[in-house]
Length: 77
Image 1 (tube, rainbow, N blue to C red):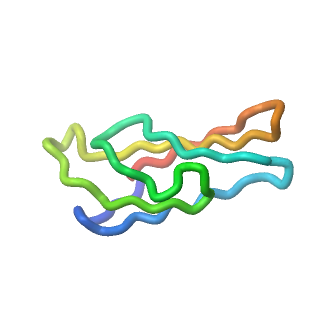
Image 2: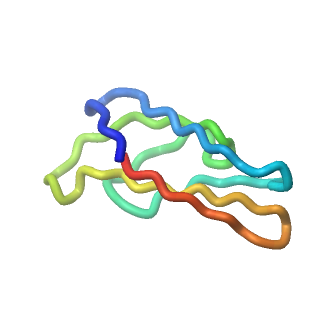
């Protein structure tokens, strides 16, 4: 898990294998954020305010596909 200050810019920097032809970030938990480019390996968003400690973690999942199968990884911020 990575900690950041509310209002700061968060940079997501994914890595993929050589055979991956497409990627996409999906938000799967936490307060809603807007990604600069969800289909880029490197995307940014502004760390949001949160209503309670239970809702403070932004959870994102990176999907990478080679056209046949999908690999995923999760990051919690």
